[in-house]
Every structure is written in C-alpha cells, then in structure tokens.
Length: 171
Image (cartoon, rainbow, N blue to C red; front, side, top):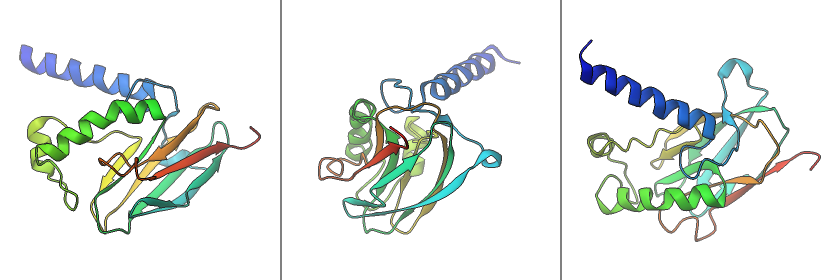
C-alpha cells in the first residue's frame, strides 16, 4: 500500500469514528445519539418537508429506541432534515452558506459533483439534503435523553421556523 493511501485511509477512519461517537457530524459534538442499523429499527416515522415546515413537527422517542425516518421533500425548494441541537445547527450554518455561495447547491438543486470536488459531501448519518420530490432515510438510535430536535439548515429556512421537536417519553 502506498503511503498516501495509508494516510487517506487513516484520515477517513478517524473522520468516521469522530462522527460516530459525536452523534451529529454537523456541529460541536453534542451527544444526541448515534447512527442506527436497519435490523434494529423499532419503528418508522414518515416526515414530510414542505416550504418552511415539517410534518410532523414534533416526534416522541424513548431512550434507546432506533427510529427509521423516511424523509420526503414535498416542497419546491431544497430542504434538509438534520437531527441535532441549536449548537450543532449553528456549527453547520457556515458550511451550508458556503455550499450555497459556491454553487454546490441552489434553492432548487444540489450539485453533487461540485460537492464531491470540494470534499463536502453532506453525507452525515444524522442528516439528509433533498431536492424537491426526493425521499431518503435516516436511521438513528436515541441513546440517551437529551435536548434536541430536527431542522432544515438551508440558509434562511431554520430562521423562518423550519424546526421540529424531539420529545423523550417520560421526560
């Protein structure tokens, strides 16, 4: 194996380990849970994104529960479903603004080739970025009771109220 291949593999491994232990890779490392696996899904929640709203806008989970979110963009603009906290969303804001300013995305399209070229693939396990009409899944294990929610971090969307609540049952 070439030295550059070993270094690249090490960087990718460390990056993945950091994302897995931090919960959401977009932000400050607040523990909000961890990526789940399909064989451990306890239930499925369908989430619709439309202009500046989520449906449902509030979900209830139990500590230790693994949820498969089937997320659909039913709106006319690009939207994001991102599990996190206000701190993680604040940390992700600059990245999303850069994606918009550099043409990696517009309000209606995501340019995956430009994102790949820039090394910003927006492929965190706690988040999906969808064009109008697209559907994707997020499988997440809520490992411990914490203050968290879900938001769209496309510039201006969260500020316009595109935020949802995660409520832990019994708390």
